[in-house]
Image 1 (cartoon, rainbow, N blue to C red):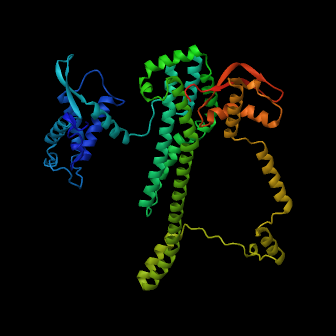
Image 2: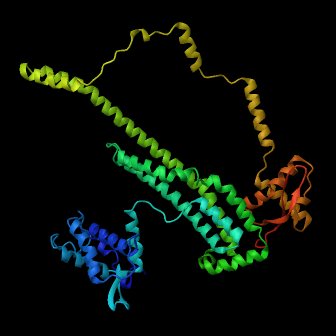
Image 3: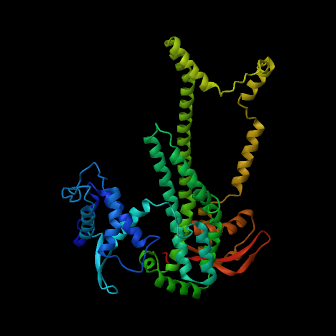
Length: 476
C-alpha cells in the first residue's frame, strides 16, 4: 500500500548519485517548516522554496556518490555548475515522488507547498540524525513517577497517559544508549589503527550531560519501589473512581482500547507501566551498563596500545639519531649534532641515588612468598559459611509456594478471605502472610487477585494494609 498511487517511487530521489544533496535539501526544508526557527506566519511558495534550496545546492552541488543505483536518475545528468537547473530538478523530483504536495493558500490566494505526511516523517528522521541530542521535556523515570502521583492525586486520566508515555520513553532511551555504545565498539574495531580521541571526548561530554543523570538521579532502581507503591494505590482506589478513570481513558487514549487485553483500559495501562518499569530495571539498564563497560574496556586498550607505541617510537628516536650521526662525516655531522643539541637543551636530567636500591633480605623474601600464597580454608570457616547459608534459606519462601498455600486456603474456605483472618502460629505463617500480596501480583498464575482494603492489619509481628484474597473473575 505504501508504494501505490503518489508514493509509487517515493525513495527514488534518495537512490541516485546526488542523494547526499537531496538529503541536505530535505533537512533544510524541514528546518524551515518545522524546526526551531520555523515561520508559521505564511506558507511556502515556489519562490520561497527556491530561496531555501539555492544556497544548499550552491554549497553541496559537487557531492556525487560513487555508486550509480537508479537507471532514471535525472539529477546525475545535470552539470554541477548549473545551480538553478539543479535546484529546480530537485524540487520537481520531491514534488513528483510524494515528498512535497501542493495546496491552495486561501489567505494569500496563491499555490503553496508543504511536506506530505510520509515526506514529513522521513524528512524528520533525516533531520534528527544530524542534530545534537535534545529533548523538549524530561523523558525519565522521575517524570513517570510524578505523573502517576498526579493521577492518583487528581484522579485524571491525562496524567496516567503521560506516565505511560514516560515509561515507554525510558525503555526507548535505554535501548538507544545500548545501540550507541555498540556502534562505538564497532567503530573501534574497524578503525583500531587510529586512536579514537574525538569519539571518546564526545562520549565523555554525553556521559556528563546525559548518562550520569540516567544512572544516578534518574536511575530506575532508585524510583522503582515508589512507582510500585503508587501503582498499588491506583489499583486499590474506589470502584467508582476506577470506572470514571476507565471511561476517561477510553476517550483520551482510544489506541489503548485496541491494544489492551481485557475489559478495562485502566487496569491494562497500570499493568503495562509496571511491566515497562520492571523491564527497564531488570533488562535494559543492565544492558546499558554492560555495553558502556565493553566500550570503555576496548577504548582503554586501544589508548594504552597507542601510548606504548608512541613511547617506543620516542625511545627508538635516540638509536636512529646515533645511526645518522655515525653515517655522516665532518661538517654534516657537526651540523646534525648542533641541531640535536639545540633540541635537547631544554631537557633536564636527574639521576637516581644508588643508595635507594637495596636487595631484599632472606626474611623479607620469605615474607613476600607467604603473603602471595593462597590461604587455606579451615574447617571452622567452612562450618560458619554453611550455618550462614542455612539461616538465610530458613526464612526464604518462594512465591510459588505462597500461591499454592493461598489456593489451598481459598479452596478450603470456599469464599474470599482477608489476610487478617489467616492463622499466625509459626514463623512460616508470618512469612506467608507478609509475602502473600507480592506473591499474588508477581506470580504468572493469574487465578488469584489481591484487593487492598481501607482498614489496617495489626499483629504483634508487623503492621500493614489489609487485603482481600479472592479468585480472579476473568479466570476459570
